[in-house]
Amino acid sequence: MFCGTKTIRASRGFLLFATLLLLPVALAAQDFGARDRGPAQTGPPKTPREAAPKDFTGYWVSVVTELWRYRMLVPDKNDYQFVPLNPEGRKVADTWDPAKDQASGEECSSYAAPAIMRVPGRLHVYWQDDHTLRVDTDSGTQTRLFHFGGSLPQNDPPSWQGFSVASWEGDESVDTRDGQGGPIQDATGRLIRGRVLRQADYLKVVTSGLRPGYLQKNGIPFSANAKLEEDFDTFSDPYSGNTWLTVTAVVTDPQYLIEPLFTHAHFKKLPDNSGWDPTPCRANEPR
Image 1 (cartoon, rainbow, N blue to C red):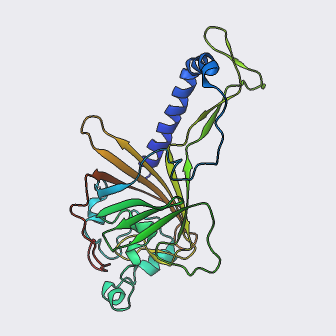
Image 2 (image 1 turned 45 degrees about the horizontal axis):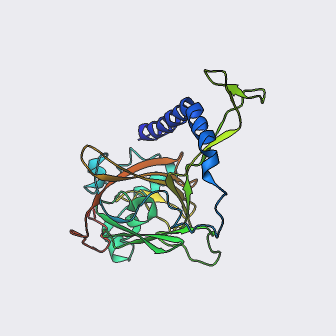
Image 3 (image 1 turned 135 degrees about the vertical axis):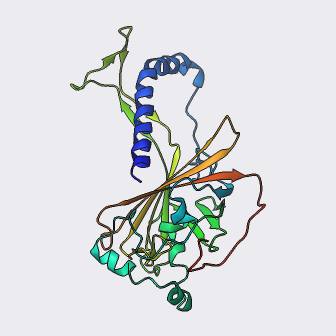
């Protein structure tokens, strides 16, 4: 499960290396066009909706590309080999009883924010307002709200989806100075100075204020101390013509996990809401 994260990091490292290679050309173009840009634009700052570097809105369907039997089926009790549980977490997982969860109103335990993106089904993503991106799921009929700005309200009770703070991320400055603080020369001997900024290109979401629930359908627990960090990205495949949404998530939980849990989920964009099928939470079914 950790290979995907290393791949993402390696990809970002490659992009950074490519940026450095193209830096002289980019700066030359920047200098050439400086006379034509005119004065800097002024006005009120853009809202998060206006500033969105990519379009995440629309209908999306899960494409299960890893750990198929843990997502498309309900795993067996005590099967937690891919989750780094500590002894306390294993003890809690060993008590899982789906019939008891269903009877006590805890059937949504495995549809909480740390698990919902890996529950097979469809998403509907849209802007609730200029500062709030909303994600509805047909599996479990859940709603996630990504708030740009703000922090966890002190008086809000814990909930399955918690409180999510969103931001556009990916801004990186490439330092073009040598180790002594001096400028670097390009291949032609021209001096390169300062930093180059790569613009934001993905959505970061940090979720806290969670009601204790399950990381998997078979009762693998997360506690109220858990924190969820997610990176959302979207891209188009020029060969198939499909548009894809990827979600990389990291769950930290000092109560039940011995180390962070890394997961991935993938979605394909749909042309419309065909197949949209809101269903209630179920304790003993995959969705």
